[in-house]
Image (cartoon, rainbow, N blue to C red):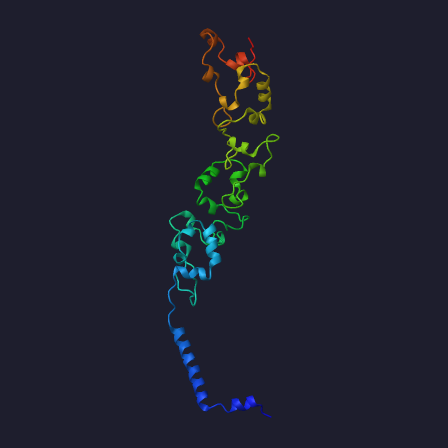
Length: 275
């Protein structure tokens, strides 16, 4: 049994069928022509419509990448039938040893945050780091000890991170501040001890205990000066008495006793008189 609706549909006027068919053909033709028509070129204002999150990342942590426009790095028409919309890194980065290293994204995981997303801190990186920090490489080549054999990422867990010496090493003395280490040691060549600036005598006494005890007990003026006042430059340094004192005694006495310490005054840190 046919319903009233079925009867009405069945008896639709043939002219309406024809109109519907014409509309469908028109829409199909329009779609085909739209597909064949080339896409309009992108402009900078188009990018935020879909990629607001990436634009926010590059603005906050893009470094120098934040100074260029999206279309400087994504020059191709969006979206291509095949291939990539990302320009090759070497299009902008060249003429430096660091840029000759292949596979940039292996370290710089996100080009919108190239320095903030340096990944895989456990990666034994050395060549990559020294390609920019050549002066550090030269210093480590001349250094002795285990620091010269380490990968850069052993200490620098992320780019720009400077570890404290006491993260790995035990202090020379109790309550030693971490900043004290760099008064004497260079991080990339720590065994070349070279005190710089004002270094309290207590720092030296942590290793040179006998000399520290002598200075603490002496009544001479040597007891009130710092160690680096006399011991200048690279460690170990041994100053000469006459560098500060000249020839304080009679010339005949100096001719007879040429060794100030060995002949007369003993250890320079307590200055006893043997004669």
